Length: 260
Picture: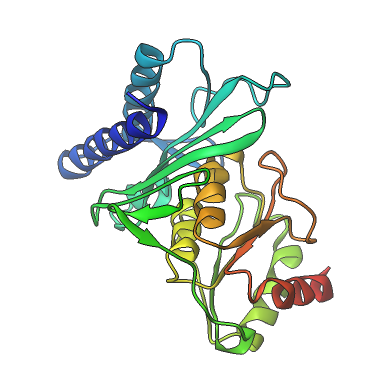
């Protein structure tokens, strides 16, 4: 079984686990003031990691709930970076906007990624050099070239209550300079929306590698652009992300620069 085939299988099976919990109920615990974890997160992650270890025992795993090694200097090392339930707050409230996110890096470079939305049965997948797909159909970023005509999306990190004055200026500016700003509550789905042309851009502070690993390659393979918020090359382990269709990227960077 190839890496991408296993990632697709793992994401679909984990999505089924999430939907089973959603139907029958689950326990919720707090990792922080507004940071939650459920039985579903843990069961989904356990299933994904077991599948990976059974097929690729030499590969490394970094998962949101169980942790793992953050990165590797060995060029041949594969890293699976997993968010077993991206959108836990949505899930715990019964709001149907969440996903399973599985990204694979080799030597620090993204080589494959899968994002699965079980509520809509939408599976986004990408392999380096092979394009991006939604349920097997090729997808591409939008062709909107003017920021004022764009629809963008963002989110707030878990420290928003302590750093609200730092995060709100960008929201204010984009509300003034775009056609609309949305907040879905799932960073992987935000990136999938950019890759599929449903959104034109996405920015956020405070994300983790498991939030962005799959979306990074998905957006790039769909023809988009991914950088840090200051326009420098993206680093999956630095909490600074701007991804767009490429056409409005510099315009969004200009707005973000005014807000710093």
